[in-house]
Image (cartoon, rainbow, N blue to C red; front, side, top):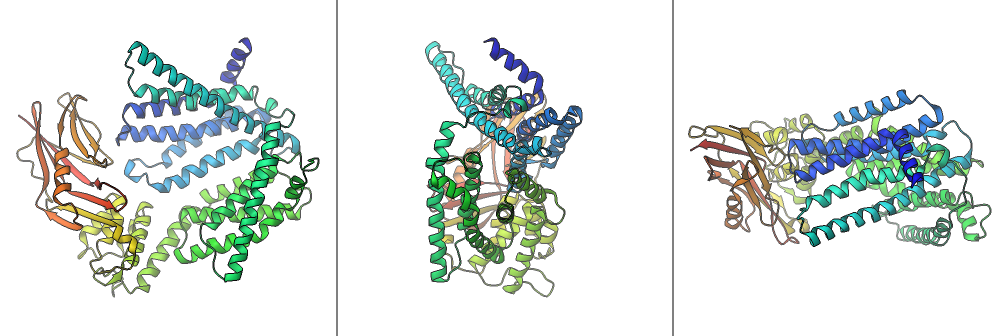
Length: 594
């Protein structure tokens, strides 16, 4: 017990920022759970804080390992904190701007922070085995941490259930989420630090090769990889015989085989010369040579897709990984005494390039490429008039309309509204101009597609989907009979304070049984769900656009009379879904004292 307390004390003294980051991430998620993950400004701020804090766990651990090697603690840790603050402000201020674009910033940054941990302390050191032992011990500690955390979390949750059921404490459901977030983030970080003991010194210690890892690599991982490479070679032969282009998803299979194969090579690095298993020796010697024809297949597959549809962030990263893989293959084939440190360092360099290099980073390339693709598509289908504006009245195939709408949505999410507005005539398409500048970007796809009235049906899949948009003719909200008016939408319905009372919009209209309520002081509520359900029933089976004089409903709530006014309502139905989904862009809550 004294040993455990000693290790815990050392972890708190040596890695305080790691524990602080994990505690911050846990606390943020717990607070989000308390707010029921509502789409409010507070919850979105907590979401950003949770993301940045989670990133800080691996970053601060890597910096501490660097400090243990080279010193300069204050400089490095201050730099890490400033980086996290800067990263927080890179994230959008409002939730509606938090599109999938940010996933291509957040996920690679997380990957880079973990890669940084793997090599940071060994940039200037030439000891290959120290580097391998360090990463092997890290890998084992991560696996052990996952097991211990899983058992601990499950055990504590079951204990709470037992106490709740046996002694009638009525804890409520939220306690389980609180415990999960606390143990899954803060608890796992603390356990991981306990396994690492004194940090770099213990991680570099030479130990026996784990029997389980040896068995897994030699008897499961490498034989499976051999099976996969045989499949890929047979597929390559099929392509040559039939003289056809490879399918797009084969690039992911080649990348998966390559990356897992490199991992296997790293795992058996100390065994490759002494292993008694012939297939391990053979695999270690020929692996990089087997990748050469697969690289040809990989580049053919991905560039076929890019030439047809242009670059997007995912395709950019596939190309980047392909180039990195080609670099690794060339390096290991060309240099007899190649270092295994080259793998994480080179991957880090490629990823760093993808995120920050001017003009050639993933975001710049994707935006330029899709802008070019959109212009080419419009010119190819002769959809631009003499003023270079889109003529939406022309007759086009549904697949073309879908592709144009996709590119509009893609560019709008990347804040390229200026490019799109140049293609729209503000006199004839005034509503679309407003949608591009002000509307929810997730619904822009449908609004652009609906601009084309003369569509030729060629794509069978489009018949499996129907979309109805109910549009209110109300452009000016009359407030003569009301005292207050609040604006809200799907991404912004924060609590509003009025005369010491708190009003909150409870929005679950995307559920199978839609709910729209106004809640007073987290207690009393006025239910406006009937407005949504009645419109769903009345217009069931219809599609396109329907203009209505007004979309509104009134109700009383204690000493207030309320009116909810929706400016539009979108009802979408997929053939394979039992119930339609419902959405809206902009709405107003009018309040009058009785």
